[in-house]
Structure formats: structure tokens, C-alpha cells
Amino acid sequence: MRIVFILAAVLAATPAAAEGVKVALLPVVVHSQDRADYLQAGVGDMLASRLALAQGLSVVRVADPKSATTDPEAARNAARAIGARFVVFGSFTSFGDGASLDLQCARTDAADESARQIFVQSGALASIIPKIDDLADRVARYVAEPGATTELPAVAAGPASKGAVSKADFD
Image 1: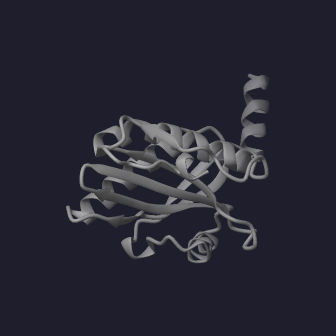
Image 2 (image 1 turned 30 degrees about the vertical axis):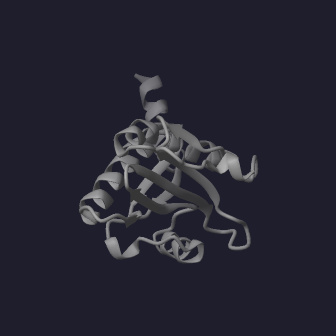
Image 3 (image 1 turned 30 degrees about the horizontal axis):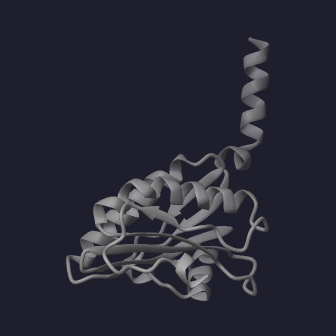
């Protein structure tokens, strides 16, 4: 009985540790001819659910579609407004048979620091969906060790569409 009381007191005294690092998830900017609002909501739902599973993160989803941005300073400001230490933002682009989910993760207290690039590209939308788990893992690693690397590698999601060029081709 005494152990249960002590354990309950310790847990009650450390709510911040139990909640994890607060990460704001902004809606993605959608570049597509097909049902942009549906894609924005769906991608947001998938990202939020995967990020919520990451240990050490407390995800706060910003639901207002007008908060969607690819501008790092605007994203940081939106996240600061809700007290988040990090922000995840970016865009989803659908082009022909291809698709790309290009996210950035940034610290809200480091305006002079570049946001980390985390992205998936594919020959088809259906190939991106399974890779959202990898994206969430990369965000969690960055939040745990923000100074570890300047860029996280891209996640290849299935066969690229014919003629597609990867980021590695540019490096």
C-alpha cells in the first residue's frame, strides 16, 4: 500500500516528464488538383496518429487549415503561440502518378537555425502512406537530439515514377 502511494506521488509530481516534449503539428500545404481539403485532413490525421505513438513526444495538432505553411518563421510563430518547443510543417504534392510529402521540423527557440528536412517521394500516393511511420520516427529522433545532424535522409517509398529524380541525384 505504501509503495503504491509513493509511486502515485512521484508520478503526480512529474507531469512534464510524462507528457513529453510538446510538438506542434501544422496542417500541410497541399498542391494537388484532387480534393485538397480531403488530402490535407487525411495526411494530418496519419501524421498526428503516428507522432502520438512516438515516446517522449506530446503532439498538439493545429487544426485550422489557414495555419498551413511552408515558411519556417510562420510555422515557428504558430507553434510558439501554443507553447510548443518544436513544430512540424510542410507540404504534400501530387503530380501525375507521383507524390511527395515534404516536411520540416524546427525548434521554436532557434529562429536562426535551419529547419530539418524530412520527406518521402513516390511514384504513387499509396506508396507514401506506409512510410509515414518512418517520418514520425525521424521527427522523434530530431526532437530527442536536435543537434545530431543537419538533415535526415529521405525515405524512398516504392518505385519512383518514370523519369523521377531523387534528392540524391542532386547531391
